[in-house]
Image 1 (cartoon, rainbow, N blue to C red):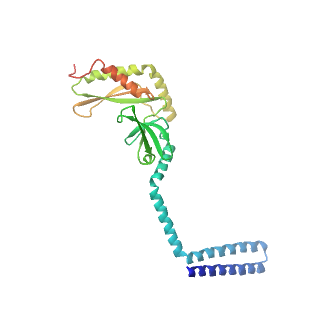
Image 2 (cartoon, rainbow, N blue to C red):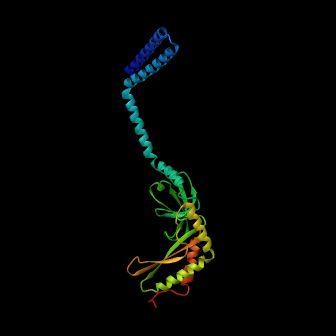
Image 3 (cartoon, rainbow, N blue to C red):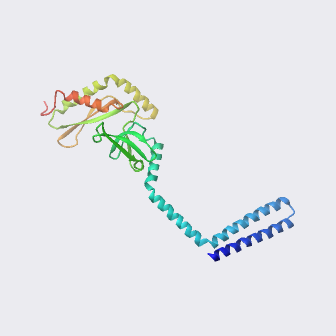
Length: 267
């Protein structure tokens, strides 16, 4: 260390002497004031660069050791704060992509519910269930770290502000009278949304134009799926007012199955 300090001092003294002699020579021998000023500035900058290079050569090993220490410390800080960094990145991502807003019903991995709070590090939802098809609040609050939004897709069930499409499944056995159930479900769905169907149609048309999307038909329909050889699933889809999915679904099921179970052989 003593040798390095002595070498540094000698370098500084040598540069000061050379700069002083050079400046004196320029002032005595250069007649043009413009050229003299330019040479003085260039010589000053040249000696400054020479001093920096000399210091780098003298202290090279120490500078490399310091740089390695800084890199190691930075790497340790990044590893220690990885989750916090991911959470902040997720917050920026969901904000920039406008994935959802307060009040929207979202699903991330197995977490599903209504968004009630958002911060820089986490998003809080009120859980909705049971499962992925239920629409009742369970009373549990879930705090989701925003880091999940970096690696996991977000399902937003609140596509529009006022009206939504709602679909639910009614399972039957192959030997049940599912054709009659299909017709009964369709008629009940039409009765449930008859009063607002035209309003929904105009609203969805406006949404499609503003967002450049082709909005599907808003008319209620009941489609058929065959998930297994002995099963028939009826998929009921209809437009509902936001927040009324569970109410409309229960009204249709109660009306259809109040007087008939549709079990047994088809007639």
